Length: 254
Length: 208
Image (cartoon, rainbow over all chains, first blue to last red; front, side):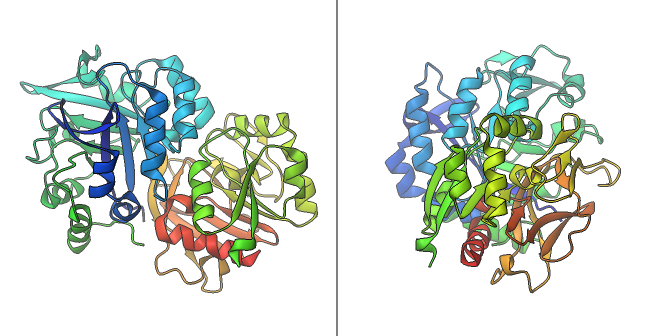
């Protein structure tokens, strides 16, 4: 039986790691800080996957990013997905060569030519399409480009459109809940058609294991991701995983 | 002693080799990454990793004449371990991107999961799932848990393979690994499956 996945996200900008609240970034620390507080060769035993995103608001140095990336994931034997500024096949290659198993695409998700090219090289299953959203009255508005660019498609049709993209998974992130620790938003999940056949990663708002447990009890949800560096510091991830297992969530064991 | 194992990872320009390299290095093997046919044909232990499109992979392999090198290594009964797409490339053919011939190291075929047979479960099959096998399967020796990381939409058909295999349930039971003479293959990624995967790779190296 396929297990549910607990995913940890690291947000990177110019050699530092960040907390995000409603997409406003707040610096937490550099690689040394991360290593001190999150030893990934140990932490990795509590999570199923790691996602590292370059969310730089200005220009970024891909070479520096991939150097940091390599250092973070060394001796970390879990799947690693990498995203940020993938606007060309060359960037995708650089991330893959630095150890990425999957690529997270947000800003260029609707660049169908690029998606097609990446799928032809790395396979659809290596691509995660990421969509950030806000609630507006009873509707949803979707964004790309670090939440700054509204997606110009009918929100009610977004899943039927994305379904046909050459991507393996879809990651949905609530901007309203992002970094609040108030719990995940499940309203959008209700809008996902029953027959939507791509795995869904849900993120935004997990503050503790109870929020994550609530999520895993929902149908149609395959993975939950959290980027909250402070909520899960120390043995927070290990504690969370053990609590989830105790509550009967089907997670991988090793 | 794993320290004495000299492993060549075949690099045909697709997918991430870094994690496999790290895993084997962590286990103490001596590793070389190569796309040079003469290096590959002479190696006693080969790893064929890979993710991505079967068709593109075969094109790359032929372009670099890696196929011929693998045939020579196989005739000499060198150990060859295929991971994910690497396992699928061992096959006679795949229907990914139209009919494409594989390396034909074994006579099995590769096909996409059909929505009906997997009871409309999602494609790709992604995440940790259990590989079930007989106790005598040496690749899984000493493992406490058999959860491994999968990410694929196609799989090799079981056909005549029955000994030293593992199967995994995703709506149907499908072939998730096999060991046949000098050939080893896993549909899952041992290099991304934490301790379970490291132990499996260690078992493999100990069998060589």
